[in-house]
Image (cartoon, helix red, strand yellow):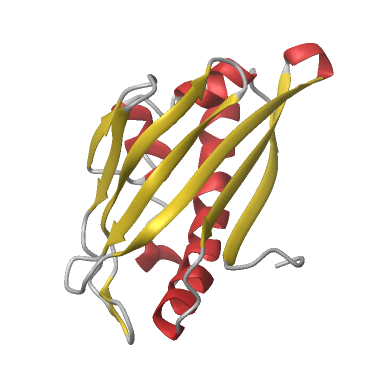
Length: 172
């Protein structure tokens, strides 16, 4: 947590794709399905638009949150082509229990190797620190690890391959 108040998950990954290509993967429903297992998405790369993604419910139950999956939605406050975006008032709602939020999600991209590769930084944060939130942030850290590995695999793969799911069940 590095001295900052609240809960923070921060992940950095290097991807062999341009910054524009990496950002577009967050705004194309078909791509979100491939790398993040999203079943529905309402995402527009423009400020003051909703950013909402939904996942199918898992077959297993978490001891605190119930079945995982559900929805993540917020307001896209800022979008900078080629550098990143910021989602405010983000809420995660599991299929069976109440929402967790508000949170902030910041996605930043930085070109490497003259723009042929990208350093992607994901930062999700919240001010609340109660036990349910701490549990969720422990889970979401692992979720971002899986998702970003799926994103890297999706963007770096140069051939046609069958869809490989990155679901919770696969790694549980």
